Image (cartoon, rainbow, N blue to C red; front, side, top):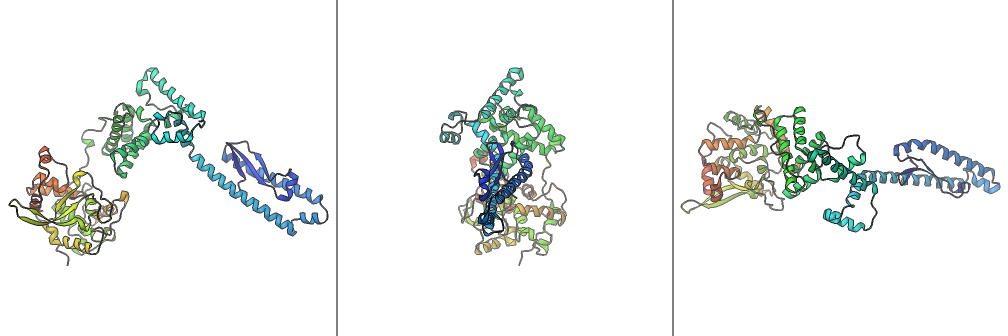
Length: 529
């Protein structure tokens, strides 16, 4: 549908094309153009029908006048049924269609410009600063713009913001007074200036913190979400103006909404992280969230529990192990091997899911007598291999080698891994595909939780796949595996300074420690044929 709208500056105008033969009646003009005297697009659209009807009435009058004032061939040519009339009408329809296209394109361009309005204002405001006060890329933009004139309104917003800060301090409120945003009835220019002038927690701080710390996209998004939660409850406060009262109000608001103490503490921990970074980088005077948390029994997290012998028997006698079932969402052999690998390595789910055939290695190592002994190991590493991207690990200590437990060898894990290598699979569980944040086991984990509850009958929500890690730790301690050997196998940080000096345990110590690991009373499935 044709809009016949155009915009000059900030005012909307009505446009309507005039057929070529009628233009003499309009002084040679090609279009009827009239100001709608409004800057509001919706109001302008409401005015269109009346202007369109009036324009068409003018064209009909001009057509009638032309018919009365022409004789002979010229009169016949003016009639719409003749060949020339049809050509004129087609030309006019083409002009109408062209106007519709141009109007639509103008409307789309206007919408894009309006979407960037705040960004343009912010840029105008930033360009009023000296290049020493700007980020390098902003200084380069200012250089490129040269002697451009800047919007006085934006400069006034900057002045309003500075006056607001000065007045808050002069009235005796101190720095904490700045943490209270302007009231809703304050001038829009002031509210806009406060929101765009100073660094904000959910933009500047999160972006710069994430870049410096090189955190994962998932971690960055989690911290940005908390910053947005904070602003949603206390208002858009520049990071330099966030007060301890704001943080305490945020905590109280979360509790009032019914969030658990554990969830609130997680959010407060992320707030402390961002505000500490801001203080360390001179974007705030101090970390006003320091020490703010929920303490006591109510805040104690629901710790994940290890699986006991009854749980493990239920898991490893389910149809996957007793009947050879392979649920589709279990992603083929991943359903069979991932729980077993977790039980006998204590490794994290993603560490196991991203294993490659080349990560299953037979390595020779010296025993205490200097004799070379071979053993199979799992390599948990971030290194790229065979054209694959790097793996994701939790921290530096997570990179390690883990001896393959004799039970895994008995069940055929080495043969399975070698078969995947022979088939030229990039990963030993090829049906796992990247999900959220490129985690290969994201979808698999979503399947395993309900399977654990329904098929295996383990309903305690404190028992999840990660419980295998606690299970390994629990039973390794029961059979007397050295604490340091446990940490090396599980990829935990060193327990004390002595571990740092030792530089980790030898492969011989790891292999011997793994040999003693067992779970009394657990009957595992027979090797698959």
